Amino acid sequence: MIFINNYDHTLQDKSEMSEAYFTALFWNNPELYNMYPKSSVDVKTFQNKVYGFFFGLGRHMHEKELTSFDDISSAKFVKQLNIENKYSEYGGYETIGDIISEVYDKEENVQSYYNDVKKYSLLKKLCDLFGEKVLRRTDKYNYEKMSNEQLQVYWEDKVNQISLGEDSHFDEYNLLEGLKDGIQDWNENPATGLPFYQSKHMTNICTGWDYGNLYILGGFGGSGKTSMSFNKVVMSCIEKQEKLLIIANEQSITEFKKMLIVTAMGTGTEKSIKRQKLNEGNFSKEEFEKMSNAVDWVHKLCEGELDLIKFVFMENYVMDDVKRIVRHYNTRGYRRILIDTGKPSEGGVSQQRWERFTDDFKELYKLARPDGGGLNVSIWVNVQLSDAALKSRFLNEHAFGESKKIKNEASVVFMIRAVWADEYEGGDRELKCYNYVKNDEKNNPFENSKYIKDTFTLSKEDIYYLDFTPKNRRGQDNKTGLDVLVMKVNFNNNTWDEVGWTTVRDDKNY
Image (tube, rainbow, N blue to C red; front, side):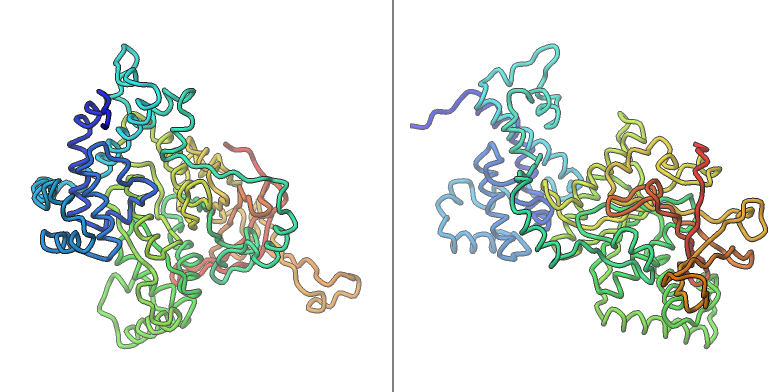
């Protein structure tokens, strides 16, 4: 005899609609199983056995690569599994089919249904531990109005073990164990990331763009963040044939394609046209030929892998959607992600924008990290700096304004700005730049070192940018002795050439 608690009936009744709609959405679009892995939700998560059965059956069919769950294909699959009796007991396809017709246009609510399913799963565990008092309402406690996270916090001192069984994750290791094995592993498998395109110095700063890390590039509005990221990150992925997912919310796919043509002409074929011509049209025969040759160069560089770079445009930037998109493409091998541009999630009126922004970056870090339930992916986010920092020569986390805490989640933070007029050659604040060159190039008989410092100033005939490194867990940053990288920029060709280093004093103008 199976004993059923009173709270079981209550939880089943309260969760029935959410579990039914949640399951029906997955049967209507089986691709959702890629975004909600077994570690997040499985048969045991459900309070109602009927919907737990259909949800588990659907995942099994999806794993067998069935793309459409109609009455014929599901009945055939049930027969193969020899579970026809159970299938009939739960009403067969008619049970789920009727609900599919109700939710076919409600996929945008899937996260809300998921949250309810997880919430009642947690409540079931709490009731098993503490009994029916979990469902008793008081002036300060009402489980129906509380989220999953709020319930975990409320019962934190009593349900630590249960809360760890939900969406929180941790991994335990012995710090003193396996040290010599670790040294051998570090020697054979160095923690070097993807090198930035044609950028030896930028790559050396942080040993490249590595998995398990979150990188931020900050710049002022319209100052070249997307252009630089395209040159250094997108072109590197094409050159090294690394799959990349671009999540954009400002510039369209057409604008990115134009930028690719411009960059390919600037860095590849080195035969460019005026960038504005791509918008004006009416190309000459010579212009057609130059752009066609640039396309051929790109295709040769990526060896014809035209699906190497995926582009997803988000009309409404919401972090829950970003996470689902990242998980979806991660299962397809896209482990490098460029977000252009990171901004606070839309909605969330209960929080200040800077608070939402900070919370969003915490979620991005959780996605990127190699442990603790993360995906071990590389994430690069372009972020607009505060207008209040436009008067600052020296850029650091204060340039993020009220959102400066986002730097806490990043492994590496770069910030760029154009060189100011008085920092060019002959200006009142002229920058003293330098490079290290081989001694024999200068033929300096008084210097014994192999390399010597070659100093120079910046010509007003060209455009230069400064690349600051306010934070760097993978090497030095500007606070610990790293100077500022100087780049010569040609926006017509989208080239960002490293030319040397300079020192910019922190004017503490923030």
